[in-house]
Amino acid sequence: MIQQSVKVNKKAGLYAKPVNQLVQTASQFNADIYLIYNERKVNVKSVLGILSLAIPNQAEVTIEASGEDETEALKEIIRHLEES
Figure 1: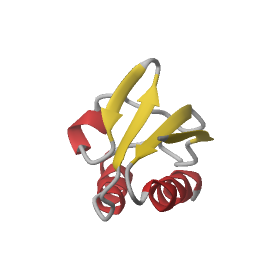
Figure 2: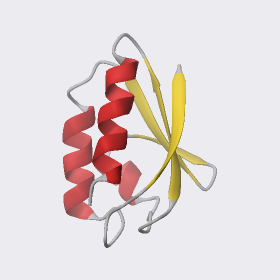
Figure 3: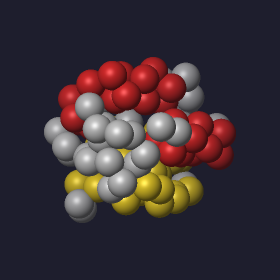
Figure 4: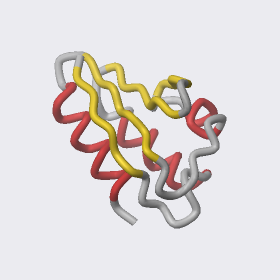
């Protein structure tokens, strides 16, 4: 298992369109991937789970990945969250 913190760089935070893109990216990997914000942990492959966190722009979140392709998954999820 690996994890890393990152700042969300989405102008309006994580709302419907960026969340859908994030879930599509995460679904390409076999690893279990979680997003942790305000002591809540949700599966990154769940649109409703991520939306329930109401993550604003510039929020600090932690991404946790475990599985055979965890390193690649972590890199892609972080890249997605950091691009505006």
